[in-house]
Amino acid sequence: MTAHITPDRRPSRRLRAAALSLATLVALLVTATPAAAHNQLIESDPAEGASLDKAPERVTLTFDQPVQRGAGEGVNQIAVTGPDGGQWTKGDVQVDGASVTAPLHPLGPAGEYVIGFRILSADGHPVSQELRFTLTSHGPGADTPPGGQNAAPSAANADDAPSADGGDSGGGIPVWVWIAAAVVLLGAGVTVALRTGSGRS
Image 1 (cartoon, rainbow, N blue to C red):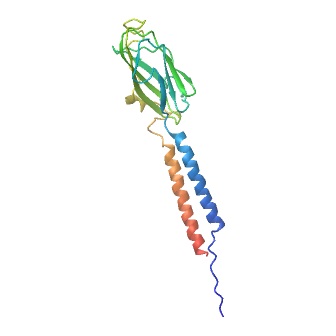
Image 2: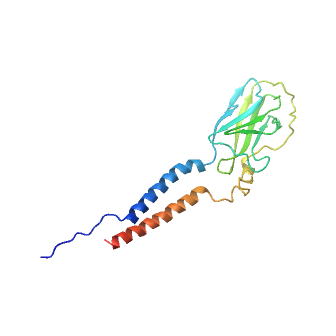
């Protein structure tokens, strides 16, 4: 009488190790993706669309991640453009963790002011945006801004700003590309392990 031997179909050590590595990499992908994202503005003072009867003395922007100081001067910029197109910021911006602050000359004319900013994101790429607030009455300053008519930072030139590693913001490969490639390679390894394990059963 011939005994029937059932093949051992339990996963091999190599297969278990590959599966564990894949699960670990997926967990790293989930946790690393938010850190690799561009900074997001979560609060501003003055707030977007605010109507103020008193001129602010400074602009403060708060982001969801710390702002990098950058490799050179002028990487982080804030400009406040008045109703006549003049610039009302004075001095350099100050970076404190996730907050960026710019002092203002005493505002003068009533009307809409535009806050334009460009900051170096946590992932090394510049981020730019515009906000608006309205001064409902004439402020303590003159009608002509001491800051002159300098151009404000805008989305048009944000892509030309240097990243943290000194390269152009559009020239680097995003972190997610490398992570996705690692997942694909590990998935291929798991497939090979599965076929090897099946062949030895």
